[in-house]
Structures are given as structure tokens and as C-alpha cells.
Length: 440
Image (cartoon, rainbow, N blue to C red; front, side, top):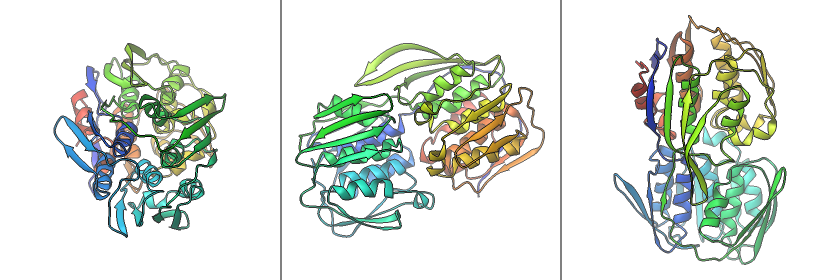
């Protein structure tokens, strides 16, 4: 087991960063490009393990893919154009996005396919996609709703009506991709969640209608529409940027500019929450790109952090950033309360529990339930003791959050599973060193 050791706080810095492409968009680009009969090209594709596993799965399904230093090219096979031998095995690795979305593309495929994943992904719930995808007519066998899963497509997928109640963009997107293979109109009532798939469908002029309500979106999709090529320069991932945003605001006398960040409104819950906590982050060079909103972010050290009662309506748009938000709450004056977060425990590890564990090790009082956490902030927190972080199912966000905590609050940290970052952010430690962080 490889440990990273942190023994010193980061010193003040003033830097400019560029971050790799958005993971959600990288995976969606590859899957949708495979359904075109044309050649699609992407720039700034995130070449993390999750995205590489996506490309490997598509290759096994007969899709030709070329990767060079500066771009990735996919020769799509069209709707229901996958070519593979019966009893094919696909490995989604650690990626819930890949695992759930690719099942949506396979509902019309002839032959049997087995989908597996790593130890962490094999503990996660796939019933949430199996249930709606069964309604299209596909046949599934699973380990009580967990991986490995066997799928056999149907000759005639039926459009469905589906009520998505969890606020899961993965479930919604899986159903949307399945709908492309049907003759007719699929209707989805979806609890608010990130909307990258809808924006890509609209940009490609696929027959999609989205009616926004206060808490839900009504989505209608007509299938059997030819998909054009999708050439895409993928913007930087706000979830990866968040580590450096929090590092900057909680470090002394520091400033950071991050270029070309995707600030899709369904993804920037962390910016709204930080604003409520008294942190100002400036957006410059604002522009639209193929439906997504892009900006440069300018971040400075925060002088004072406010405790908050976080509105649940922001949960889905900050779901990947809550471990970092808990660190900010640890530095606040007063008690912060975060509720309705059971979905956090459906991630690569039980993240809500891990958020509490990290805070306990730091000496921050907190009260945890299966859905909420109350954090008693300490603006003067200085850690002196040794802290060991391990046995977290190689969850990349637990690893990276622990690194940020060590650089901000001090102490002697030993953090296991350095290779966990390869899932989503292989250059994370290089960028930490660029900012001046000392990693052993």
C-alpha cells in the first residue's frame, strides 16, 4: 500500500492553473460519439482510468478509436451498431457513470453482455437503472441489483414513462440514451440533477424537449434519430477545480486563477454554498460553448468563514464536493448543518461517513446521522497530531480531500492509496506541487 505523507502546511501562493477536461462530459462525449455514423473528435479529453475504461468498453463493442497526445477520435457505429461476440465481458472499473450509462446503450443489442467493475463499484446500487431499463424490454440478471450484471437486449425496445426520484444524473442519462433506440416518445419526470446529457442532445438537435419545473424537469425524447458527429473541446471539471478552490480560500495570503472551467448551473452548488459562507469567487471571461457555460475563476484567501444551514436544494449540484465543503465548515465560526445527504453514501465509498471520520481525526466535533451531519467549526484549528487515512475503498475524493486537509490545517498525515487519483485526476499531486505543496 502506497502512502502519501504531508508534514507541512502549504505556503502562500499566487498562480494560474489549467485543469483537465470534465469527467462527466468526457464519458458522455465518448458514449454519444459511438452512436453517430460519423467521425467525432475531442480535445482536452480527460485520460483518467474512468474515461480509458469507457474507451476500452467501446473498442470491445466494435468501435474504432484513435488517441493522440492532443485529441481523441471516435469512428461511430450508429444506433444499435455495436458488433461483438456473445457473452462479451465489459469492465467499468470504478466508474458508476460508465457502468450505468452504457447499460442504456445496450438495451437493443443482440447477444448477451456481462458488465463487471472493481470492488468499490460492485458494492453500489444498479437496481436504480435496471428497473427502468427493464421497462424498455431488456432482460437483466444481477447480484441482487449489484455487479456483475448480465444484459440481453430486446429486438423491439418500447418507449417508456419513468419517474426519476433520486436526483441521479446517471439514472436519467441512462434512460435518455436507451430512449434513442426506441420507436416513439420516452417521457421522464426527473428530480433536479446535472443536465450535461440534455445539453448535448439539444446541441446535436436530437428531438428532446425539456420543461423545467421548480423541483423536477419533464423530459421528452423521440428515438431513431440519426446522430451527427460531435466535435468537442471539453472544458475543465469543476469537481477537480474544487480541491484547489478550497485549498486557496483556506490558505493564508493566496490567490489562484483557474482557466476554462465548466460552470454549468447544475454543477456549481459548491460556489453557491461557499458564497453563503462568505467566500467570494469571481468569474471572468464568461462565454457559452455548445450549451455549456464556461468561465475563468479567480479565488482568494477568505478572511472569515460563516457557518450555514445548507439548503437541500443545492445538494445535487454539489454532490461530489461535500467532503471539501465539510473542511470549509470545520474552519467556520459556529455550527453548520447539512441534511438529506444519504446519496453521498451511494458513491465510491460511504462518503458521508468518511466526511465525519476525517473531521473526527482532525479534532472537529460533529454529529452524524445516516442522512445528515452537523459540524462544530473552529476558526483557530491547528492540527499537531498524527493522522492516518486508509481503508476507504480507494475513493479518489477521500484521498484528495485528505491531502487538502493536511496542507491547510497542519499535522502529520499519512494517506493510503495514492493511485486512487488515477480514477478521475491523475495529475492532482503534480498540480499540488506546482502550487508549492510538499508531498512525500
